[in-house]
Length: 126
Image 1 (cartoon, rainbow, N blue to C red):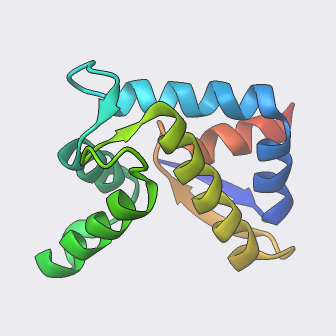
Image 2 (cartoon, rainbow, N blue to C red):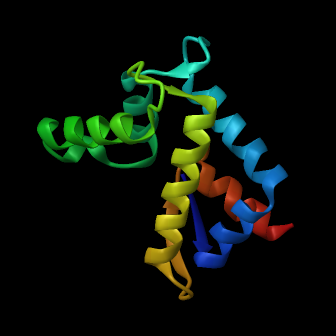
Image 3 (cartoon, rainbow, N blue to C red):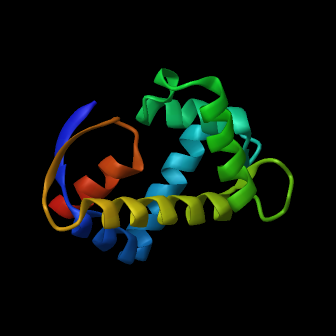
């Protein structure tokens, strides 16, 4: 974990820098794709989100519903997994939602070392 300060522009500027965003998404996707099959299974998503979010502290039913929603929303091919392009869409939508929620006021946040959020924070420092 690393402590970082960010606001909405940290995330939106990162997304708008298409090359940096694509590279960050690729790095995260490859880290999550444990079996190297080019798609993220429900379990790989759960394990990956579990590193960045304290999902273990909520009920199993709530976590299952979250992943059902994510898979249902972004699995455009209906395979029960998320491909690289689908993961990019998921990542962009999540970061944009976070940016809207954060707004312009800087917040202090503990961020997992391998997260896309940390890549966005490091991008801002360049």
